[in-house]
Length: 479
Image 1 (spheres, helix red, strand yellow):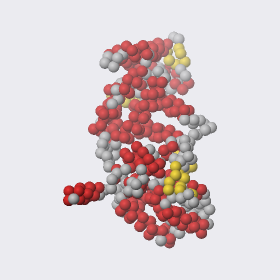
Image 2 (cartoon, rainbow, N blue to C red):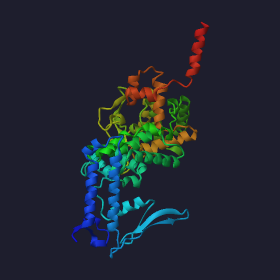
Image 3 (cartoon, rainbow, N blue to C red):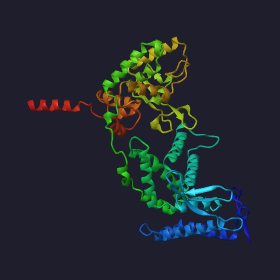
Image 4 (cartoon, one colour):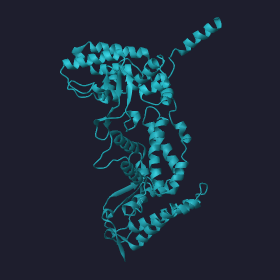
């Protein structure tokens, strides 16, 4: 019998001396031909969206051939078929299909087809490796190269974090079963059922339903990464059809569609006043909070400038222009998620990795007073640092583990529903800049985003708008 040697990484069994017999090899060749046919441009023209009979027939043939291949390989040294049976396990009596490999490894699956898939892979039967997981990994390697990430060049912190987030989202949304599934077997119906099960599973593990935005931005991002790579490399044309049939509207009822209105995301003037009073109290209690209460000064500048937390942490003394009465905001502090290291990025969030000179924020008289007070305290304490906000050693304040945590704890002390610096930015826009008569384009420049974002996400009328309107209307009728 003529034999074909299996690559070293596939030799995991003793049957046939670790070789695939010629008869089994012919079956693999047949499977490969069918899989190539299902992804060919010619077949994609034949198989229309409303006619999947041919596609299903070919997949059925591939399935039959895989079972035939396994039956040829999964035998004892005497050529007898190895036992495959259904058994119950555990106290709940869960049913599994089980078998043992030649090296006494137990394989099991909840379905017979699933067990045959595992045996097919075990016996070196993987044809082209076009599984969802492998395509994702290939797509990520391509994305790294496009982003300039190489062994000698790690790329910017924001790019590294983007890549890390892709991998985190993949772990969150893609199950091992989907990762191992050949993309040619992923039909629109399969993808829809998988998505429903995935959303329900996440909802069960959370105290609140997942929001539609997380689904669209993260889960769909992983699918599109794989879909795009598959399309570009002509791996599986029906995969593109699956993407086109994936409608967000099908899943709306499964999400938490409630939206917090803008003024519920911002601190009110009364809440800012309470926080400010607490900061003042702590500043005047050096025995407990130290002579230089840095977090308090960061809060002061945040409420008087609308700067982001990461921008406050990376602010240098050279960025403060006391003569021109302005602050140059052109950097941010980033934490690389993979290494947990903090780095200085010479661009702001809205500049998306490419420095464009940053922006300028007015240095208000009250902010100037507090900054000069802070610098005098640092000088008295012997703190010599380029950073505006530092610890006792002169190192920059870490915005997530120090300043943000401080703001969260202080807000929870007052039982506020919101606890983040973003709420200060929204307060500054709608309770300071709008009443001051600053036009939307200038408000957007000061806060570092577009006018559209400012209008749709940062701007709202004061909470007493109804009482004010009522008084004006009553005055109109009385005149």
